[in-house]
Image (tube, rainbow, N blue to C red; front, side):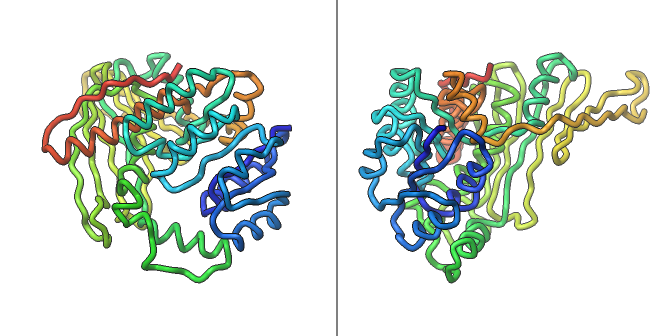
Length: 349
């Protein structure tokens, strides 16, 4: 049995980590840590967690723990992650990995010094993305020429309404740290854009350059609520990553184009689209549906990695650093109105 502690007793712990781990055989949460004792008591009662604390030190000194999930506000991720690794525990990092490239490099160094500790970094990837990777590797659409990914929603206030309901608390509309530039260290790009960028990296590999434009359309913040990135990949493909907080109907799509066809993600299925003729411009394409088998959830994937003593295939520290560098370079590109280089590389094999 793997005993897990959770640093951060907010919405992501209540709505994702705790309910998912409750369904994983061989893993249990035994300690939660946060600032609000009322929330901690509620989570312990709801998910049968035996211990809570309000101090990082108390959680990290818990000798019964084997692993820790960092689910704190973005600027605290790297500091907490390093502390967990130094304690000798397996680590699950909530996205984004960090807020500076120095923090990302420090986490890589600390992880590489401890290869026996499994470091799982969100975003996780669903069965359809893994199937698209297999199709691309098999040459199903020929040479990849381009891709488009978008991940957006209506803004943090919608998420926080759900969080307030989960904790049976009144909704507070004017106290969202996501909108505070000093607390959040980034806007929609690092909050939601991380998903579209991660999917593109999972499918296309290393990005060499990014050109980005960001703006604030509607939200009460000095941070961006809308962003579009053009990525130049080492394999020659171009891709567009879009994100935003001004899309209450939500968008989550992914498509990859190649010289012999394209793959379009549609829900949990993939449309495999190929030309029926290379001599007639308007010939109807051939369309097959690919329905990948369901995968285990992200915590069970982490558990499998711990049991094997292996780092995750895609959701690893090197890929997370690359995704973080893309986002940081995008901010640089937007500020300078210029293309920005990306120097790190993912590990996606």
